Image 1 (tube, rainbow, N blue to C red):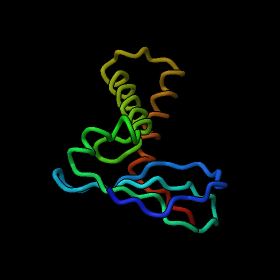
Image 2 (image 1 turned 45 degrees about the vertical axis):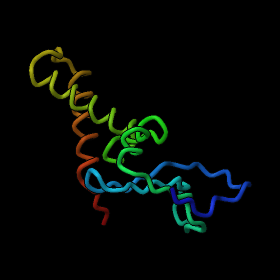
Image 3 (image 1 turned 90 degrees about the vertical axis):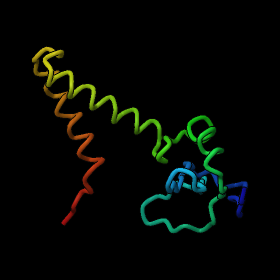
Length: 121
């Protein structure tokens, strides 16, 4: 494992796990990086570890809260829930009400936001 310069002890910023995952069998780079506020520059080298593929398989969800692909598990679960809601509406398993339609449209927006980068003029 490779560990680089940790954050100062007085750094209270929220941190997230970020993984660079290649093909199965390759090593995986995992970082514990600070969440930057808009306009803030990165002033440190995040803590970094290089894991073998076997270590990644064992630790990706439990230690880092990331899916096998390196995505945040919570985001992954939200996306799966959105797909389930859309499927229930499409198959008629969800009653056709205004509330359910709004929730389904919200689920579609959730998925679209993940797939398409927002364009601002």
